[in-house]
Image (cartoon, rainbow, N blue to C red; front, side, top):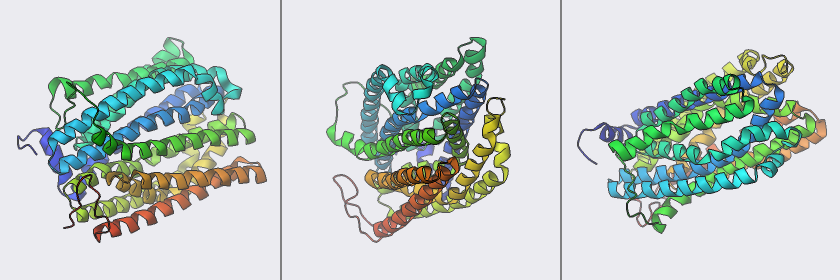
Length: 468
């Protein structure tokens, strides 16, 4: 590691230093970034509420498909983050730079290809996602979003690269700038320009794209990041690419799996309550996601910290970070769950203030309260998933997500068929989330114990793990 005393060096020192300080330094900026982004999503929905239920439903149908795409990009970002952080922990700056350039090119190519495919086949994709009864609004929103996919993916990658070197504040700045810009542009494009739901999509693409200019300046202009992205004379490196993708592919499949399940859930809900049910479910999840941010932030934060500890060959630090993260996550989630349950009726007001959506308020509040019951269990799964990704065990992280999502579908299908109510479906979601989170917690704890005992002798590619 360089001893120049630059801010980039200091960020790395924090990440490699005291576990508690490192966890806080990484988790808080991620939490703030995600909070601002979620608030932005809610404000988006508030503006769209004035356009009616069809606009809300269109966004909620598009979201799982868009989430699927973002998941593919985030998978590469997570894979790159652990690959870079592990090399930083091993003091291999050249190797970290090489991994960054490989990840950048992979993401750019993926973004362009996916954008073309999704734009061309938007109609059948949206119909498969439950938009058959609302196609005009769904297409009006989705097409601009699909065209902006390369910008979204590159933004996610550069944010992940910054976190991998401990520069979580810079990563936060990208997200906050994009979300703040979107909040300003939304009403202009929706109402001033009169573009309606299409304006909301265009504003999102522009807002997410402009902050990339700053990130590009850091990497290619000022060049003051710890890790660089050398592109001159670029050649694909199979070993590095596999090191990224062995975590990135399972991480992508996690998001793809969740997106597919969300699309199927829309179809299940549409069979019980067309349009209204999808709006309740989608808007309710947006609110719950907002309150799950601390748990998700902690899960994201431990990836570079534990990966760096792996590169430095310090299994006891990995264990310490893991248990600290789980402890903080559970405590915070219990408090958040109480807030959701007690104030659900007030929290859903932004989603149901218009005359067209007032009738959804009661059912939406009930859904939010049901979700509050599983929140204290979520840190078990999220923390374990972050641990597995940091150690290169992407398939183990994928398994946790698969358990939660695969059991949700049959339970919800059965309950929807047996009772024919939205309440029954909400209880199916509750059961699946609790069972999946408990599985993730048990899997993570048993794995970390085996790791510290020396049960995984070959975690590092072309190297052996030295237990201290």
